Length: 351
Image (cartoon, rainbow, N blue to C red; front, side):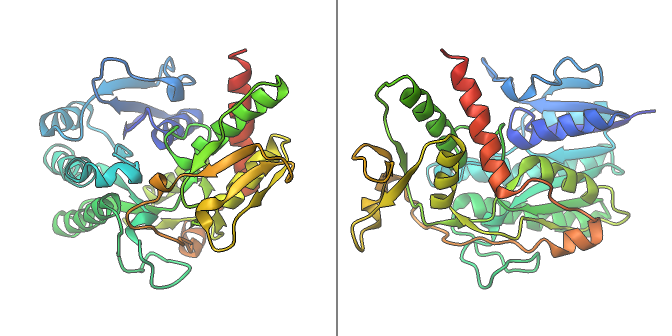
């Protein structure tokens, strides 16, 4: 009999990629949970919505009744929770909602499993934002939690409560620390997708000799450890199939600035330029076409700076590589190129 897997957040990047991965392997019945909204966007799910082994179900991480009902009726063998408010920048505007979904939502999942399917294996999605104001680099799974945003703090709370339930009730419950990961399904409000979509729009405008607006960014000197979401869902599946539950960290082990991401994105689109900056004033930074043109492709907007910025995140995935035999397959350069080319194709369809 096919094992049953309940995946939350299937309209988002990781949930959709996990469903695709599981359905391509075969042998599983996948239940994808979404909230009831008036106009859901299924663009990330187009490849599997009609798959006979996939079923869309409704639930809400803020509603204990709906989560309990799903676990009781489905009796899942695995519960993979990607549902979250995952946009760090807005977490200062709605900290209570951030905790209700990201921390209390995890408790609702754990309670439902404890009551109705105690043999179910539970995965909680963590974040490198938990490390925040880092003590050392690269960060490993033992690095202290020092979040610098309500989002990061909510993920720390989820991490702690997963450990409490695992040790108190002998549950197979784990919390994976995931460093930045992107892809063609990444939400358009995230900086990487904002860049690649902006580059694609500029590419179309340049080709058609049209006017365009520059991409507005915040701190381009922030360093991040970027990987591909498709590499990470493979790692997560390895985590939840270990004999004993254990938290792991997934990362590329490399760090790149947002500025580097911009450079590579324009290069992937065949647009060449360079940065200019008045000495000592990072807010004056501009990316100019062909280095000498006065038409900016990127400008800096101080409104996009965070109240408390994290300047460097760099993960140490050696434990996951050693114990899970996990290896990333998509490099940073390939990731950027893939995202840009995808968004260029989307722009072509608008013509």
